[in-house]
Length: 363
Ligand SMILES: CC(=O)N[C@H]1[C@@H](OP(=O)(O)OP(=O)(O)OC[C@H]2O[C@@H](n3ccc(=O)[nH]c3=O)[C@H](O)[C@@H]2O)O[C@H](CO)[C@@H](O)[C@@H]1O
Image (tube, rainbow, N blue to C red):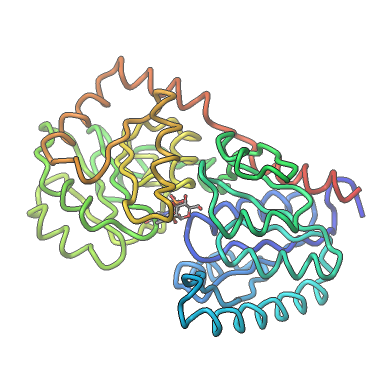
């Protein structure tokens, strides 16, 4: 095996949500740039299947992805049976691909492949992008050579593991944004106007959508509102087809969305936040209230305490308060202090750090 990764095979388990998928794709880009080969394990979900068509240069395999039911639930037995069969399927993939390493990007889709790797004696790794790591990753970590973390705050949750701070990988297309004019033309917006991007994570955000759609923003502010699949028409109706208010369902052109924006209202999903840091976009972070163990609040606190974002809980947020905070975030002095704080939080070479750390242990 070559020290730069040439021809080494990496299995990357990254299905389930955008927050696992996109950093996994970013690692695939970095690994193949070094001459290595990858297999991406994803779920049956639409977002994963669409990615497998868009990134058709990579080999994708679909594996079942069921979240763990409560321990005493009658669903537990079928869950364990499916998990066992999925581990068997993953063992087949890892063997057939002659993988040199297996990397899980988090969630329950990571557990079976990393466990299969352990059974086969292939080095396993897991990446966690959150400040408060998920249960699946904490369990999976015990079978890994090293645990990669996106934020320093996560380290304490992996007491028995070798932890490496890598940051969370950002996909290549976000590193080369189109010009503001080009992006605005694609999205039907005016490049000369200040623009607020609203995004509810890859899974949308009904209540947050309503708070934004009813806000009376300062004159001249444009809004690009990604409402999430399923909520697009409702938000269009609610925002009243205002001029300069553009609503999308899912956005498959995030580079243009970011290129035209000056500030953001977002959920506190780790990948979105990583991208905001990478691109220097100040934000109001509104954690998804039903996220496991309220982990999005932990994520948002890291940025809020650094002065890189405002943290607002959805329950206490009104449309009037949101409009005031957006105006504050766009004031030049506030904006530049937030941008400076974001710069300190950004890890620009996260995908490279992940590849380096894996290769180091393979030597
Ligand atoms: C509800 C929930 O529990 N979400 C979790 C999920 O991520 P979830 O996918 O909800 O959110 P993230 O912010 O991590 O990722 C969203 C990703 O989707 C992309 N995007 C978003 C909207 C869109 O229209 N188009 C598009 O491409 C964003 O650019 C970003 O890359 O896993 C993350 C990583 O463990 C967690 O931090 C999140 O808290």
